[in-house]
Amino acid sequence: MRIFDPHIHMTSRTTDDYEAMYTAGVRAVVEPSFWLGQPRTSPASFFDYFDSLLGWEPFRAAQYGIAHHCTLALNPKEANDPRCRPVLDELPRYLVKDHVVAVGEIGYDAMTPAEDTALATQLQLAADHDLPALVHTPHRDKLAGLRRTLDVVRESALPVERVLIDHLNETTVKEAKDSGCWLGFSVYPDTKMDEERMVAILQEYGPEQVLVNSAADWGRSDPLKTRRVGDAMLNAGFTDEDVDGVLWGNPVAFYGLSGRLNLDVAGTAATHEGNSVLRGGE
Amino acid sequence: MTRRPSEDPPEATTAEASGDTSRQQTLSAPDATTPAAPGISYLHERLTARLAPAARVWLDRALHEAAAHPRSHGPISVWELRIAEAGRRCGPEFADTARVLILHAARADTDALARVYRQGTADERRAVLHALPHLVPGPEALPLVEDALRTNDTRLVAAAVGPYAARHLDTHNWRHAILKCLFTGVPVEAVADLPRRARADAELARMLADYAAERTAADRPVPEDLHRVLALTGQLPTGAPPPAGPDTPASPSPSGKDS
Image (cartoon, rainbow over all chains, first blue to last red):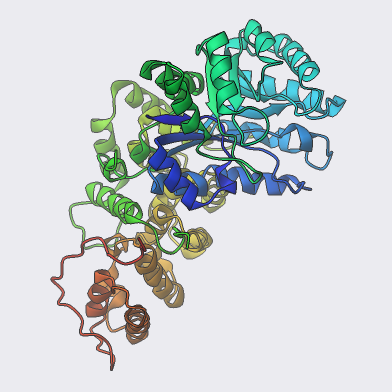
């Protein structure tokens, strides 16, 4: 089973996780920039973080045979702090980088006017840079948050076919699917979504345009949840092709919209031509 | 205990660093004994011959733009945008050389190189390091080399110990760069002008012998490259393990990894 985790915060994970993920079949990840748990107070700490997502983290991933890309943005929570807002002015120089495959995570946290501005601005940045967008839906007041998110997306220059709406669940999947956006589900140990509920949603709504991620971070989470979903799908009677579509084909298709996805981990690691040592374990 | 790629990279790191070296050799001028970097026209010719047609068109345009508009217009100059996108335009395996050529075409000075490095991805930073011997005659870009040597990204470390460092890096930092290569599994073939700088360096020999003793005390293998460098110093410190002959094959060091 080959797995592409389309949303995982590897900065917060250990090398043991990388090893376990590789063993479970993970060959590619996308790491969206997000809130680090401790609020930042200056743009410079965002830039060091972005640099890490474009430098050290892909290097670290490559050591374990995993291709690493990222999405960059000012996250909704910190968009509310005026000290962090200048990050928006510097994003253009980051969004041209080779390993950036989307603008994200953007979206709503508490649905404030500052979040409105950050979301609209960054959807425009995605359109300007020919990038898709990864849009998070809020933890609180989720359905209202989804509706407001979809309104802003529809008013933006970015077509819905280039937008992935993430952290969906039973209450939001239908409206998200009707919108024409890509559908993201974060499978967590306790919250958001579990593998059995995920299978039920796939049975009801089909695997088309569905991406499943672990969204693993510094909180209680499990970087192998993608694999668990694949196993649960097979147990429920889905075919290998269905599983491959959800866990590999769909994320490749969505992030491939950037034109910047490079899944050859030797190439990603910028080794010399023909070096396949990192792929020797496959 | 968790394996730490910072000091003990697994197999892949060594292979990768070795890959980098091979690429440098691939693109090196025929006379590999001189510390001079391969010439820009040689790099250009070689790259052009290997690029796909669309990438060749892109590169020609990028070089033309860089030569015509070397200064910034707006927040970011066109050639800096081309540097950022070189990987997806040319293919990652050709991006280093393409970026070096663009930096050269733009006649990037130390300030511009520092800006591209500071604002660059790891791949772009590596290209800046490769460009230094072509663009900076004096030691003023050393802070970039020193920055790269502080990282644990073996691709950056390997690029940092090229001809520019051979020419300008002070003795103390150069010795530590050699030790870092041995620690992180960067093959010493990556070190430009190694025989000349190592020759008769008694302090380097002492550091190598101490490192070998530390490894031996921990019942860990001593990197083969260590013996090779020690032999190049021509020094035989008391109590040091007998150095291997200069013909010892420099296979990727078994050190620097734990598993």
